[in-house]
Length: 197
Image 1 (cartoon, one colour):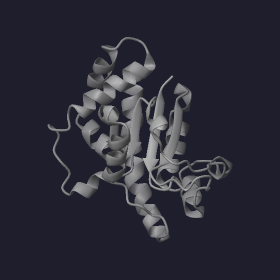
Image 2: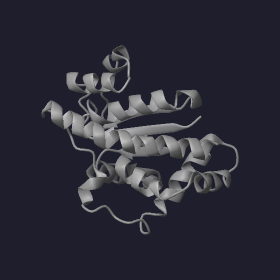
Image 3: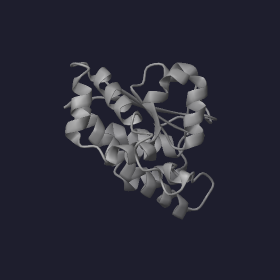
Image 4: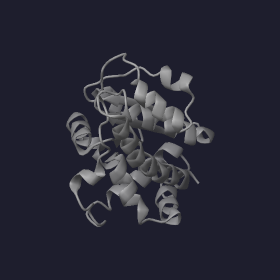
């Protein structure tokens, strides 16, 4: 079984949305997908706008309503095979808590950017070198993509690797956040499936 962790600030908008979408998209692979916040608003639900956005994206309202925020700590970072943050600041926070996890930690849009230039066959080959264990294969795929950090074309602006924070902002900002997140999750799903193929 593979484990994926998504990270944002309060764990009430972006990271739970990413968690729920990935869990739904990858349900046939039975992954463990969770989320936490670097300043998690412990036990708070998703914002009403985040629930509405999740609903638009096909997540049942009851599933979104069940979410409760967690404050990210070092223990949360020990076992995930892939850690996806919403911004570079969140990635930095993960690196400070667990420096050994950097090869498996990306902003979600950075991960997508690095994956775009890589074929499914290359991902599968990198994963296959680790044998048949699903978690080891996903970690190998993440390490393979991390190795492209110095090779891939950088984004036009550094914040192009971030997903905008919609908290306490307009509905249009929530929609913009979703439009940044969803295509990145398309690439995450593709890589996970290729790694486990």
